[in-house]
Length: 263
Image 1 (tube, rainbow, N blue to C red):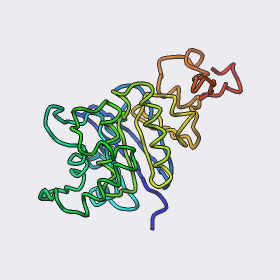
Image 2 (cartoon, helix red, strand yellow; image 1 turned 90 degrees about the horizontal axis):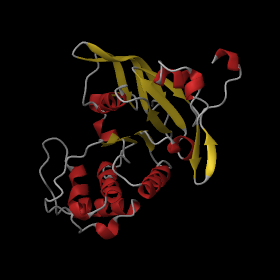
Image 3 (spheres, rainbow, N blue to C red; image 1 turned 90 degrees about the vertical axis):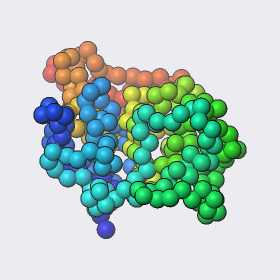
């Protein structure tokens, strides 16, 4: 059995011959909680889609729990950045979660008791069971996102991938959502693409910085090399050290360089 949940080797990807990701190597072990950060256009969402199997690499390999990604879809729960759903369509929260039970070519089995029970248990885990019969369009942004996470979790995957899950969520909802992800991380590996740097010091265990190439740090902190890779046209003096204020407490996420003369 593989000792990694994600294993990426020598990955390359290009859109219309424009190299987007180059020489990507990444190993993530089960139980990690990874924040993937980087500038817009740096390749974060592309890398996530490669992990899910929505895109095929130009070169290199992606394995999930030792299996090629095309054989491992049942191990992955995926919440994309833009979940396409018509808010005016009269579909209930429960039915949205049940959609997670539909595989390729599956027929709708809405009334299957076991599926409904699993869906309700998953909603309860996300604190949304009481909303099961509400219409999805009646919920707030944060509540809808919990439902979409429940849909991704209803098949009991080993890996949960989320692309900007708090993009349309208010500040209070963001904190609640990341607290839920931290609790879920007790049982599942979580990788989240985020611009919310508060997660670095408060919730996650590791940082992956993506800007065409990838730098991985096994601590919830950004180092100088990662920051330089994100902002190559700025001097390090301009971009670090970085401090956040979370819950009223300053958190330094990039340590001061030991030798400031080399900034």
